[in-house]
Amino acid sequence: MKKAFPLIIIFLLLISVSCANRGNPSGGERDTTPPEIVKSDPENLGTNFTADEIEIQFDEYVKIKELSKNLIISPPMDPEPQITPLGSASKKITIKIYDTLRPNTTYALNFGESIVDNNEENPFPFYKYVFSTGGYIDSLTMEGGITDALDKQAEEFVSVMLYEVDSTYSDSLIYKEKPDYITNTLDSLTTYKLENLKPGKYRLIALKDENSDFTFDQAIDKIGFVEDFIEIPTDQFYDIQLFKEKVDFKAFRPRLSGHQKIAFGYAGDPELMDIKLITRVPDSFNSRITQAKDKDTLSYWFRPKLELDSLIFKVSGPKTIDTFTVRLKDQLKDSLVISPFRDGPETFEKPFEIDANLPLTTIDRSQIKLIDKDSADVSFNLVLDSLKNRLRFEFEKTESNNYRLKLYPGALTDFFENTNDTLSYSIRTKAVSDYGNLRLIPRN
Image 1 (cartoon, rainbow, N blue to C red):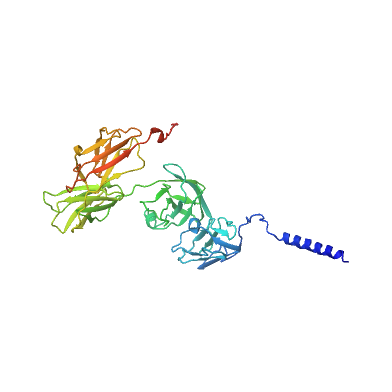
Image 2 (image 1 turned 90 degrees about the vertical axis):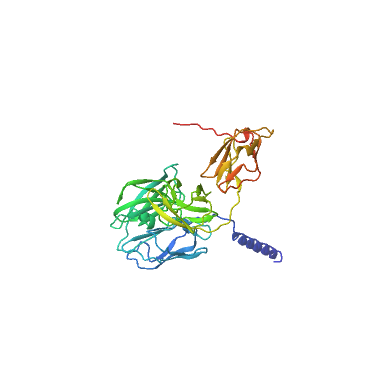
């Protein structure tokens, strides 16, 4: 018995170790099973919908990921519904509706891949909750593709919209009203599909909607459309090419923006803008117009100083004529400031340019000197872009050189008779081999 007892102890220890090992985590296979819906209240695909809250229950904890990039609500709701939880996990998603829903309309909320499980983020792909405020669910569909008119490559996150053509329709709706139906290509699709449509006549529009406001902003959005109205149902595949429209010209109210300087803001092409002073001024009056840097603004400079309270201008465009009054007041005078304009790295072909904060009027070449690294004089041409107020120095460059440009006092005179102090600029070129080569092979 004494000999058997140690054997029993060893046997029990082995069983204990075996049991402990059996429960040890070993990594195992990754969970790839997406969450499943247990219940929806009201039920999905319901009719005669009157609720203001929807609850969707899942079999496990889920969270909502990148909702703004994935969620598509068609027709759009205004205000948008509140969807929770955001930033936490729950077994329930709640949708609170604040919009007054249209009668006899089918609504679809497509969540894309935003619903994922809490542990492995397995998506519940392209879940769509659909309901109708009428007695049936609209079920017609239409499809098409998106390209860019210039580079032929598909854009990402393009909104495709349908506007119903009825007695209230006008072409201006795209600027101010949300569409009747909408979908989005998201970040990986070159095609689109509009679903849950009702029969009818529609205008088909595609927008690269930069503001995400479901309306067309001509200044920033790309647009594409099918020329003719389309009829639903249809089995035609509609390709839409996006392009950037030229912005219609518009003049904005001018304002005094500096010493004897008036800013004329605009949208569109400034070459279409004609500024005419109506106020009677002395014979000695002179003016100059320049393009403000990095702004859609023309700067109107004038001299001499006027003993007037205001100036009246007529501003004309292709389709509009406006009259504006600008109040005058004393402003601090600006000193002449010169700065080099650099647009990317220095190359052999690119000229050296300088900008001025005040309009340049006179260039004295005798006060400008350009030499190379051996102190040899280098010949150059001068070109003044009076609209951009930019002076360009054109000269032949050689590789691995260091040029020194000097502008002595009086080389530059501005509109108000200010002159420059001594200015010095270094312009370096690299060896040809440092610039690299680009080989182009034309193909028919």
